[in-house]
Image (cartoon, rainbow, N blue to C red):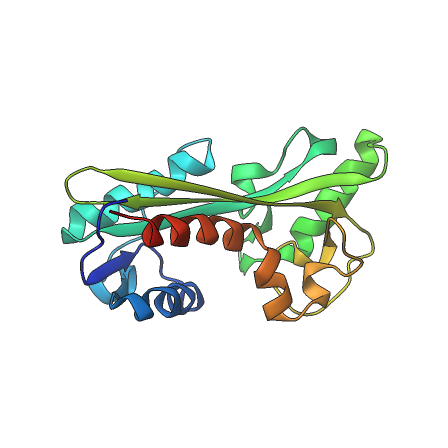
Length: 203
């Protein structure tokens, strides 16, 4: 993988996500900035794949700043719903008052019942990271966490669909785990491990 330079733009307005990446890159002498640092708007995500939407975010960030940029897109695929909500994971939570993932999880459960989907309700979280340089060079890292969905939801930590997702080999939902335990096996962690490996083996 190409060198990143000393400043990397994380194409997000999410402060928690920025901090996660900043901790990863700090030992390598790389300072992470976010879209908010440059007053960049959120680009419209018009693609129908995680890769496509991550590319939109990365390309918009590079074009606006001239810096290397790292963007991610992620979501949950439910087998009993033919892979939905997928790239529309966050859309299922949209309400006039903001995102409500309780509503999104209720919809997922309701549609599984209406579809007569047999248990176990297998699903996976997926994450796609796109690392883009100003010269157009690109590196892509895919991560996933396989598991099953449970109902009623359980747990008060985490976010999104975590309270209904039980990763393979575990009894607790992501929302019942400590942040450290979840982050060790999450879809984003899987993608980040691949990114770190690429950084450590770059020539």
